[in-house]
Image 1 (cartoon, rainbow, N blue to C red):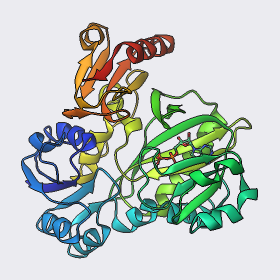
Image 2: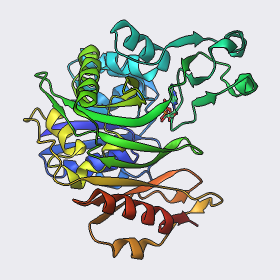
Image 3: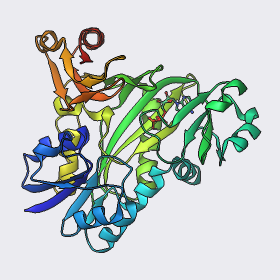
Image 4: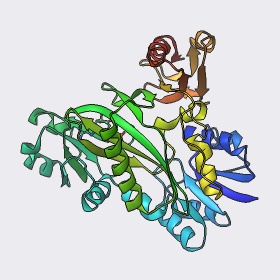
Length: 373
Ligand code: ADP
């Protein structure tokens, strides 16, 4: 039986392990927090720091393959493991490119992949010197996550909100739609696209609000999106699962926003709504089985369940019974003991033939279900 490790034990690791139960695989998790969402679903839990070279290297030695559920891992250790024959998904070189938003943007530029124009700023003084580039979005090179490393700079008054660290300053796109496309690539370079996902963002938290799939776009836009996403994964030269996030503007122009080299929040509905979920697919890739069928069984929506404003403490789920009484609604709680405002605590998937039913239920769920304490 193959031994496969996951760096990180959050909700993505948890859902990967749920899918692993269908396959002949021995699973390992490396994570500091032994109460993390994935801890009790793996065969072997190893306590350690995913950012520490020795912890990652010692964890990976002797495994057949290894994957990540978060980008902030020690890629030097992964590189050494790869040299020693451990299969790593994504490849450490691809991870290195993606992990730093500066390198990621330079990669798009070099490969002539459409992305909004940008400049690099090393510190606040350099940002100020480029005030004429506004309106723009400032994105920290390393360490940003869930909107925390991103500042919208509309006018020069906003400049103090920028980062005093190496960052990308990119032109603000007038976003009409935000789309995500999940792609699977196996070791033979075979590729499978999932149907597009429409991402609706909560502007206040700068965090995903709800998502609908398949997104309705015209054929020309679909082709553009698929061609861009294909160029991204070809350029990265790595097997694995990739989520390419794109902006479509009013003119129908498409720009890559960013790529995640792993299973992604925008693919959670694939558990119920697609024949092979993104989690099932990653096991197929890692275990070198044939790719699964990415087709949608039914249209779906995802509502993210985040900690309510003003509540920090032991999580309680208000409205859960009411949600569970609704038809074709699937609740996923991540098992995190503590809630705090904005923390991802779970998600709810709705499936329905009728798109109006999806948005109606998504809004109802957002109003009823709350994580409090
Ligand atoms: P994170 O990695 O934290 O999710 P993103 O790069 O996806 O950060 O940015 C978060 C959000 O900020 C995006 O979903 C989008 O709504 C907005 N945003 C990012 N870049 C731009 C841009 N160039 N123009 C307009 N809005 C942007």
